[in-house]
Structure formats: C-alpha cells, structure tokens
Figure 1 (cartoon, rainbow, N blue to C red):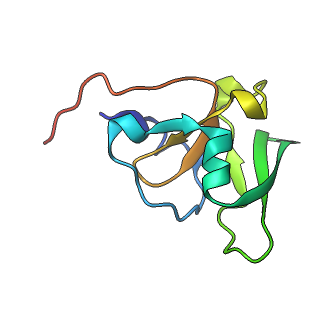
Figure 2 (cartoon, one colour):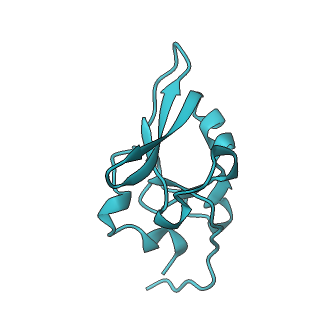
Length: 109
C-alpha cells in the first residue's frame, strides 16, 4: 500500500480538487506554501468548521482558479500555514499536514 492510499476511503479527505495524481513517492510531499504559490494562490486562510479545520484559498486575479479548499489532517489541526506540508494522494487530492510521510514498501499486484 502506498502512502497516498491511506486516506482514499476516508470521507473527511474527499473533495473534487481536479489535480492529477503524483505517483512518484519522492514527490508526494512538498511545503504547503510552495504548493500554493505553484498554483497561483494569492491568499490562504485557516478556517474552523464543525468537522475540523480546513484551508480556503483565493487566487490571483486573471488566473484560472484551482481548488478553493483543502482539508487539514486530523492530527494536524493545530498546525500553522508555514508548518504545513502538502500531501498529494494517489487519487489527486491534496491534504495539509504537519506530518511527514514516505513509502516504506510497495508491491505491484
């Protein structure tokens, strides 16, 4: 099982983000603010909701907007924007987390 597939069945992490999957284990994690810059985000805000915190994003004027909300991992709810990493799951979702993940073993079936 790869790292990205840990969250695929958890409804807390599902949304239609439209980002292509990143299957290379070395590229699964990146700094969240660097990721937001790469998709032309202009502003990010942590919002507290009834099911936990998430990050909303506004985009620079004149660019094609991407996802407008990103879930924050359940164990990362007290993180800050500068501390988050962007975890790219195999199904194309991006989750903000303060944890670091890496593939330890993978088997192709």
